[in-house]
Every structure is written in C-alpha cells, then in structure tokens.
Image (cartoon, rainbow, N blue to C red; front, side, top):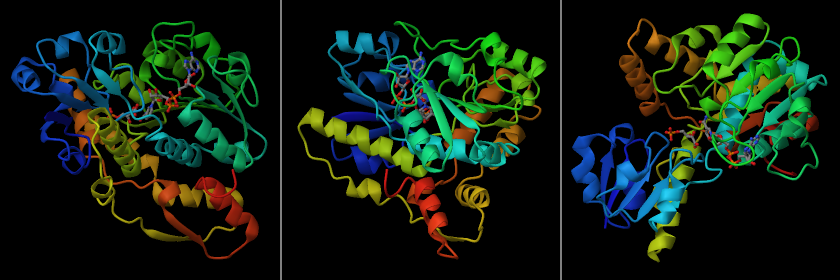
Length: 382
Ligand SMILES: NC(=O)C1=CN([C@@H]2O[C@H](COP(=O)(O)OP(=O)(O)OC[C@H]3O[C@@H](n4cnc5c(N)ncnc54)[C@H](O)[C@@H]3O)[C@@H](O)[C@H]2O)C=CC1
Ligand SMILES: O=C(O)C(=O)[C@H](O)COP(=O)(O)O
C-alpha cells in the first residue's frame, strides 16, 4: 500500500510505515500538475487543512482512504468522497486543548481582561463543540462565568442566544466553517452584531477566518478601537491581509492548535482510523516516543490571577508567535511571498507542550492555589 502524508504531519513514518510505503508530500501544492503522477500511484492520502480534497484532486487516482490530522473538515468534499465510496476521517478534538491554551495565553496578555473576567466578567463562546466545551469547562473551574451559542445543540446549561453571547467581555469564535444547512457559519457575524460587544471587550477568532469577513473586522477596528482583536485565522490564508494585521493586537499564523501534543494526537487518531479500515493492528508507542518530556517548572505567584498568568506564559506565550508573524511579513507586499512566509512559520513551528501535559508545581502548597492549578491544567474533579 502506498500512502502519501503531508510533510507537516509529525511522526508520519513512525505511524504510517506500519501499513505500507510512505511518501511525504507538500500539502498546499498537491493540486499542482507535477503531483498528478504521485497521486495516481497512491492508495491513501493523509492531509492537513491546506489540501482541498475533492473531485479535481482525486480524479484519475485509486485513492480509497483520506485521513485528515485536523479537527476541521471544510477542506474535504465529503459528499464527493462518500459518493465515490472513499473512506475518510478527521481527528475530532485532537488539538482542542491546544486551542484552549491559546485562548488562555491571549487572556493573560490582553490588558486586564483576565482580572475583569475573574471579577465577574463573562466569557462568551460561539461554537460549543470540543474546543468550546473544553474551554468553558476550564474557565468555569477558574471561577469565570461563561455563555455559549451553538444552535445545533439543545439549549441547556450555559447555552443561550447569539444576542446574549454578544454581551460578553471576551468573545471567542470556535465554530467550524460551513456554507450550507440551517446555520451556516460563513460570514456569520455582521459589523452591527460585533458593535454590540461591551466597551473594551476582546474578540478572539480561532475557528476559521471566513466566519467573519475581513471587511467587517476592518470596519470594527475603525469604529470600535476599544475592542481588542486577536486573530489566529484569517480570510484569506495564507496571503493574509496586511491592512488587518496592522489593526489587530495579536496576530498568529493559524497555530492555535499547533501544540506538539495536539499534532501528535492528530497523527495517532488518523493512524488508528486507517488501521481499523484495513483491519490491521496499530502500535501507538512509536508515535508517542516522538514527544520529548515536558520541562519541570515551579510557580511562585501567590495571587490567583498572577498564578494563572505565570502558569500559562511559562508554557506558551502567544506574543512570541505574534512577533514572529509580524517580523516574517514585514515589507512583503506581494501576496505570493506573504503566503510563503506564513506557511514557513507554520512548517517550522517550535515545540510547544500543552498546559495539561506540563509538569507544573507550586512553591507553597496552598490548597486554593493547588485547585486553581488543577483547573488550569484540566486535571482532577470535573
Ligand atoms: N485555529 C486552529 O488552529 C484550530 C481551529 N479549529 C477550528 O475550530 C472548529 C471547532 O473545533 P471543535 O470545537 O473541535 O469542533 P466540533 O466539531 O467539536 O464543534 C463545532 C461546534 O460548532 C457548532 N456550530 C456549527 N454551526 C454553528 C453555528 N452556526 N453557530 C454556532 N455554533 C455552530 C457545532 O454544533 C459544534 O458543536 C473546527 O471546525 C476548526 O475549523 C480547530 C482546531 C484548531
Ligand atoms: O485542526 C484544525 O482544524 C486546524 O485548524 C489545524 O490545527 C490547522 O493546522 P493545518 O492543518 O492547517 O496544519
């Protein structure tokens, strides 16, 4: 069996050579003519979000299995795949906690939003799937009040209307990109809706860029400069709009889900899925061995908000990703060059362990701080 694997999928050889011959391929370029022959010789293809898997890509090939080491599925034409009897899978939830860490890190550096939330402010989430739910569970355990909008889930608990969620001090977008059905998310939020955010709110977008148009975000920056914008996803990618980059407080190259743990979860999940399809066994041990041990860190803060800030920034400081993106794109006026620079940052992304798998300890064993740390790391009582 011949398996093509995107070069940004870690531990590809360890995972997929258990099933056959593996060839690494550049996901963004796979639709180009020079890859036709390679595609024609393949039985399976393991992609990430940058490869559009549709009729154009697969025609004339014998590919029977399509795995995507991502949560999102908007790059897969699943209707076409199912019509053709091609088995497919994504990796649900694989990097959901990584996105949660991204949100926490942004919370730690966007002015006093962390203190505002801890003092009775509200976190709002649009899209309450794996990312949204794990995030609100962690935040509620920190004592932060949360509301979520997700029209595809029965309204109970913290689920509410879109209008109510728009009253949040920090609004996080974690909806998938959909263009059909009763609740499509393409350009879901209008300028008028976002203008309802409270004074000094934070708007964070880490689902898909197309959920809010660039035009709306630019108009919002103009009309409501008090709103802090944090963008990990863009419309379009990879040649992101410079005019918007200049307006946002934190700008990152679609890496919210790029923890090493999250990426390896993705590899493991699609390898396990392929094994099931082929009726073979799969050993995850070789994949797990790729991850180096987390650093051991002792935290010294004694106040809750300081401890939260210290813990997350010791593990992941989103400002470093923001600085790398601005530096890489500075002076690049050409779209193609900007797109390449964006992709290089993603391809060369540094090792980043998740808060939940990090080895954090407290200098003083105060019970309230210990339970706060457990909550931050998503450990202990739910
Ligand atoms: N920035 C990044 O690096 C990453 C981005 N993502 C994106 O985040 C999205 C969400 O991830 P998960 O929560 O794990 O996916 P999920 O599939 O577990 O949950 C998505 C949720 O969004 C809800 N939803 C659908 N249409 C909606 C609408 N119109 N309004 C509000 N909610 C709606 C669904 O009902 C579902 O509960 C992914 O589809 C992906 O596009 C995921 C991982 C990393
Ligand atoms: O999992 C998802 O969905 C994501 O958005 C990915 O983390 C994005 O990474 P790439 O697939 O574009 O490398």
